[in-house]
Image (cartoon, rainbow, N blue to C red):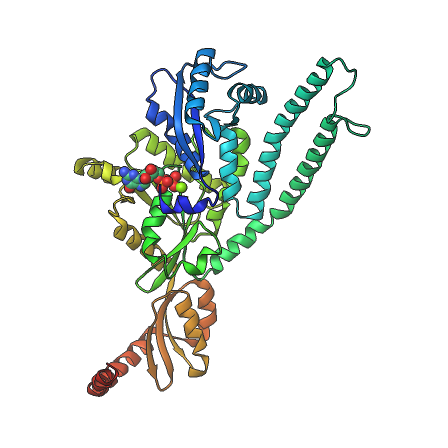
Length: 460
Ligand SMILES: Nc1nc2c(ncn2[C@@H]2O[C@H](COP(=O)(O)OP(=O)(O)O)[C@@H](O)[C@H]2O)c(=O)[nH]1
Ligand SMILES: [Mg+2]
């Protein structure tokens, strides 16, 4: 498990037994890969798995009765905190399974909702996730109260039993009314928040420190890549940001600092009622100046292509389609030289990397730097000594500033984002003037060089 995933969850890891229904011909490991990864992201360890090879589920218990017996024995043996079914369960199936297994039972939708809840950062993302959670829970609430009412009726009483009565309306009605009110409130909030997207976009354009978002399918290696890119910098640069957001870390290269954010992973077979929640959770990408699309380069050709198309389509849908992208094809350590060449030929613009071994990371950083270099503008400046504070702002932005102190002020050249461009506009000089000044400075440098060396010796 990567450091980053371990940090994400402060609670001790829960243990799960996973049951899945897979196609008769499917490979068991591949079929279970995604749910394992989803659980890991949610902070849950998979401690046992069981598969049933059939096409249709049992209406009442999801698994057939023989498989269910097998699962029960596995659960008794492993003693997990939860049993996870890698599919959407009806509320009735979930309750029946909980009764039979005497264990909390989660379905795939609940696991995904938990991950979205951890990842939602923007106000809109949080509201969308809560809406999806409410919708999910309301269907289960209905089932639960019906269940209790049935129990009440079975006891021979005319009305509902103890704990199911409310003043004037049944508990079910009360709960439903409260939930409906909350849904209405959240929908109102959502409409209000729509205006915010523009604000987010503005803040992206104004951002001083380059922000890179890693986007791609679950299991592509985003978290591993985040660690590999920023791992060495944990001590310094990250301390500043760790309080802000556990999924954002920093690295420095050539004197410039980059912030890297891990985003919520794309999911195969995403339950349709979670699509909106997923998209708004992903809106954190909107805050980035560059999106690195991460994909498993060792995946089957068709699957890789589908993943890339899906990622690009969703980025487009959430309004991130204009943000520059770099494609990183990960897990190259699983490929031989010929396969790597073929992959590069199929995706000429991609950087082929292995987050696990560090292979190709310098090239990826290079590409990231180059992308920002083309977004930013080179300027030559003369800053009056009285305004020297401005220089520290340039350093803060992490841009490499060349600096020479001269009579008319501080001569500096830098690559700047738009926002800083406006700030320094009045100090800009044209390239020819700058070159002449630099020449003058160089000859001055020569003049004073012996003395400078002597100073250095004294200092040492
Ligand atoms: N062979 C190999 N495995 C990797 C590489 N990068 C990540 N993985 C593995 O792929 C799995 C998913 O990685 P993770 O970073 O959690 O993916 P995420 O879901 O995109 O964040 C983990 O088991 C990683 O150890 C790589 O470069 N090579
Ligand atoms: Mg991850």
